[in-house]
Image (cartoon, rainbow, N blue to C red; front, side, top):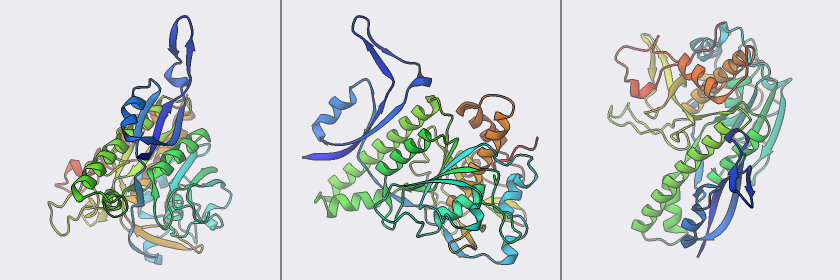
Length: 388
């Protein structure tokens, strides 16, 4: 029986009939994403092809659903959101000018006043309507590059003038096929930073294999684990191709909200895919307290860096402001800071993924965190915007 598979290939290879294959430098190679129906027994043969980087089944992807979602109060908003102050965006001389940011999420409310003056290149990868029906993507985009609303600054990098908006999640979620294709689209259209607040739905995939494909429970679990591992490798290889490409693009992703420290301090869940894949910057969520910043109860552990993710005020559907919590809210803070660092680097020289990653991760600090924090919960610490 044939199964749908995502096949990731590296392009840019040439073959001399007399001297054999000769590959172009990594900087010249391009990625190619294919989706095909293949026999399971053919997969080992396909993976032996020199240009094939990964083969994986499309797995369901879901929104990393925000917590405590409500209309923002004036007290929560203030003149500058607490998250912007925490990362130092309000005192940074950089605004993200000249940097292209991609947000792969539920879409965007393009008419929202927070995005006035921003050139939005939109593409819908779902089979639903083009607009943001949830508000999650609009909120995340607002945190990255939103303009001030009602006297409140919400955007880390409000100088961004061009943004790529990929709607990859609809009412029923999405799939890794859509995410991989959207990443390719974003890179091809010049994204310097890609922000993703989504994760693999492992339980949903195992359930589909049981209920729709008719697999017995043990086999469904085994196939789901196989698909999980293949997708982690898929995103890892994809990130490596992005790093090697001619377009300098950094991928930032939310760590996930499955931990339950408030119920049991041992209830900590590891970073979920795609954020867990090597080459993608994973982001944990911090909240503010009387004694400093602390990891959010829900934030998954083992992330690379942290960002403000509790009680975050940003753009909401209908033109107003909403407050949400989650690693989904921490991720765009880090993506926005990455845009500021990208502008900083470009002012003095060429930009590449290595120096952008080094500046972003290197800016992270434990300063201001509550005493007794676990480094495994916060990674390298809270990222900081360039100040000079």
